[in-house]
Length: 491
Image (cartoon, rainbow, N blue to C red; front, side):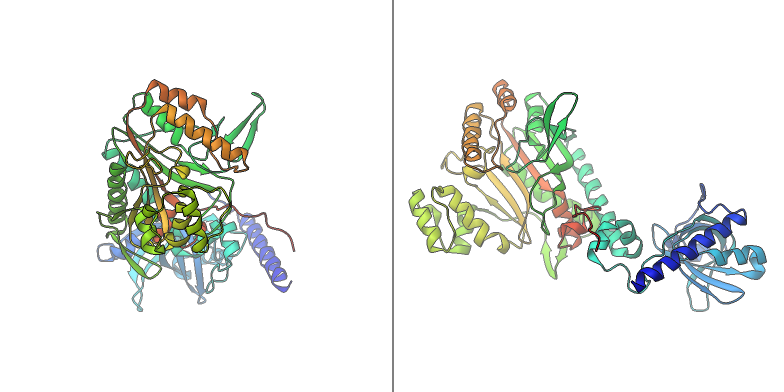
């Protein structure tokens, strides 16, 4: 209550200063202003700029007045620089008007570059322009914004006071930009597919539902871009990709947000081995260009992303970490008993492949710290991937893991329309049994396959999770500017 009262008093003080500025004929919410240098440019190039006149603009983050002289720090996009204002240089009216300035306000300032006796590069201001009056104070300087929930709800304040947060999102932008540059260099074309779809397909996930009033029809926010991009292969495009927002109506965790960003790639006449090559080279090149090295530090552990990454089948990985060898298990019943013996909670009727996948999730995923491709997933969890010729219970699918997280998911794509229809029908049986994340029937996609889709490889990479890994963040909320949150309730 006392904090609220203090805040209200601060807000009133700022409103009074706002009115005083207006009374002096000063516009407190200014117009265009042209700065010619960023803060760090001046500091880094001091030797050539000493004594030169520069113009800077930004937000004031500190003000220290000493009677006839005032020091302040100005924060711009690149960093901070000290400015110095003197009564004898600005004149009494201009200098006294600066008393109406608060921490958080924006100004533009022009002056000569010099270094103080303490060695700090500073701009000796001979004129300044009021640009924006901040009507709310920033969080207390020395503590910053530490309330995690408030940081996510008021990301704009988080970016102001926490420099490392700003750096994360600058890196995110650079990662995505580099991803585009590389894919374009490699001959891929960027495509755009519908966000609102009549059928939510391409993944095993629960969709968000909306409604189009004019057409009188239910629509779904996409859960993947896969099926539309594959239609483009049918249409004759060769190498395509999309970086886009995906929406899944499922749980929230440190690695899941209902709205997230993915990259999907599809290439004619390729297979999942080609997709492994693309994955490891794409992540390697991005890391090297954006961070200067392919060796990252994640939660205190060094991880080298240099290709080639190991490639092991799911059966091999499960044997390594659980001791159970599914190559020696022939039937669903034997797999069920192996699961019970290992302490898994199993529903009756589970198949060999479903139990193999449960072993992998339970005993293996968190162990996969160094980059690795886990291959040959069970057909039950891979309805869009081609079968292994040597074992039709498995598919030509891999997932790339780093630091215990799935980073990439890829297939040798299923292009047999008869097999695809059978897979969809199997998924419908699961849906009828209560699995609302099972895949739905997509007749138009099957029609597209009946026109003929060439052999192809496809790849999906979760961009948010990749950014988490490369920027050493353990919560997806720290790499999404405006994560999904519950509405704030009043106390």
